[in-house]
Length: 424
Ligand SMILES: O=C(O)C1=C[C@@H](OP(=O)(O)O)[C@@H](O)[C@H](O)C1
Ligand SMILES: C=C(OP(=O)(O)O)C(=O)O
Image 1 (cartoon, protein in one colour):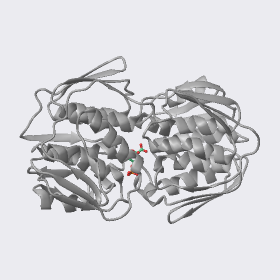
Image 2 (tube, helix red, strand yellow):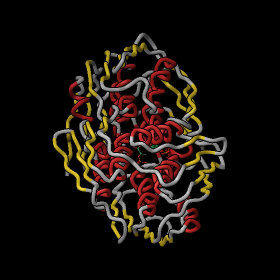
Image 3 (tube, helix red, strand yellow):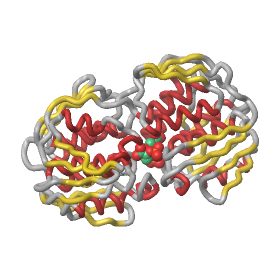
Image 4 (cartoon, protein in one colour):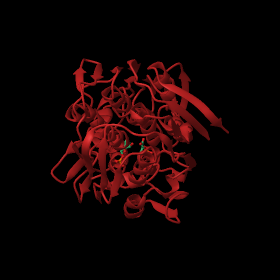
């Protein structure tokens, strides 16, 4: 457990953002399913990406990391037997591998830790047994699966997690027949599904978007491809909000034309009233006076919510974040933990069923924010220190390793004053 103490300071300078965790998960899986040799770079070896690599190893793929390049050789992928898939704390890894493992006809023993065993997988527990795969579980993890996934019609709601749609999209092209994914309610986090379709296309596999959801032709083959991973807009958002709080921050290594929904941070920061310049592979953010509260529909941008709530606290007036129910089933109940972290720093945030209402006063007092073993709560709390009058202590700071192991190094390079006060 690591606790850090941050002395308030404006951040300023240039930061190169790590490779997108979401893009990387997808590329690793598509490369593995190509049954050839592929390189993926640059990669950021976060705990979630290590979980995905360990799962492709469990499928028989050979992997090697040299510098920031991952080489995957999946020419001897298993096509039967049983494997253990340790998804650690990564929801994406779990929801992507359950159908992929089943499509390959491998029996899976899925395990995880932290909050992952409690995060929902009920959609698969309903869908898989009617499509050839037996599931044995007491609710969450551990989960045992047995049997080979069959093509057909998969009906599911679009508002629990887009990760179920991504998992099915990755798996269904491998099956003998054609399949349909029928969405019974509007899809949230659409950007993540678009990213999946885009990555699959680069590996030679296509998906058709239809009025009911998606049509996936069977008997398709992933073809080997050397893949360049995009920069991570979800991580860029932390430093963009830091830039909106003063100083001037240039975030490099991100593609403004990316399919990542979280590039919406550019429009939101502008609406809060900061100055933003968008270049071909960078954004520059600076403050141009007081920020003002705004209304935010979070249905497509769940991962931005903690740092947007911090931005709302540094603005004047009310910021309302709505359509964010599914934040309750992330690494923590992020509506509750965001609210508590900011309020412990002297903010005024109220939690409602589907979001947060933030009374922004331009500043926070400082104090102690609980990181709740949630990387995005830790990083958002660190950004909150910039607008605090007094020092900010953040617990569970090691949680950054889930997605952005160098976060505090980058924070310090921009002038942040971070001290580790407990590391046991
Ligand atoms: O597909 C992905 O890579 C992700 C999808 C999103 O989840 P939901 O669709 O459950 O909101 C997001 O919150 C998560 O961090 C990554
Ligand atoms: C929710 C997240 O990831 P996952 O669902 O893959 O655990 C996240 O990175 O914020």
